[in-house]
Amino acid sequence: GNSVTQMEGPVTLSEEAFLTINCTYTATGYPSLFWYVQYPGEGLQLLLKATKADDKGSNKGFEATYRKETTSFHLEKGSVQVSDSAVYFCALSDRSNNDMRFGAGTRLTVKP
Amino acid sequence: NAGVTQTPEFQVLKTGQSMTLRCAQDMNHEYMSWYRQDPGMGLRLIHYSVGAGITDQGEVPNGYNVSRSTTEDFPLRLLSAAPSQTSVYFCASSPPGAYEQYFGPGTRLTVT
Image 1 (cartoon, each protein chain N blue to C red):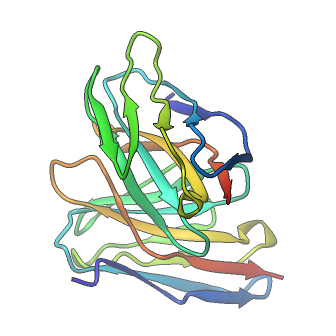
Image 2 (cartoon, rainbow over the protein chains, first blue to last red):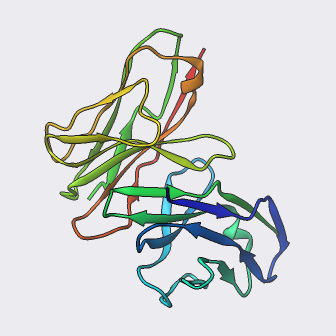
């Protein structure tokens, strides 16, 4: 079946540091890939998405590229801020069978 | 638009009690789903619906029932609560032809 594997956290960085959160997936079809962000006490918010191979999703300085050859969708940001502290979830959606799978989540803490 | 709304925000149940978690969306989305979020496990799909009158099971359906009598509402029923159902429950919806989902703020349920 489909699955998503994220790098384990927690991740602690200083403000303005470079961020990478690794995500790899297993899928039988051609899924769409997503990064969601969850701030404390809130629901998940869509951060960015990519629907086909080589697509790059971007939003709020975050980027991720859909790499079919390595089955990866790593999240990157060049300079993190304290306000980026949250839990980040990688997810895939195979709507041919209404199947959406999430990674376990990676908690990011950014210190001033 | 209010988006996806969930009630209640918090709930404490005793083992064996039943209750209904409510979810509503005002975006005319056909697809709605329920997830549970447990530490270190990401989100797991409980049930989903592709339209009024149509529901299906997700990854972890046991102990839960759903119905979809209208496009707007998708309630989740716990038939006989167990401590293993202590979790945060999220409802989500998705517009036709889109793969991303929009999440409600969650219901934090404790079963003692």
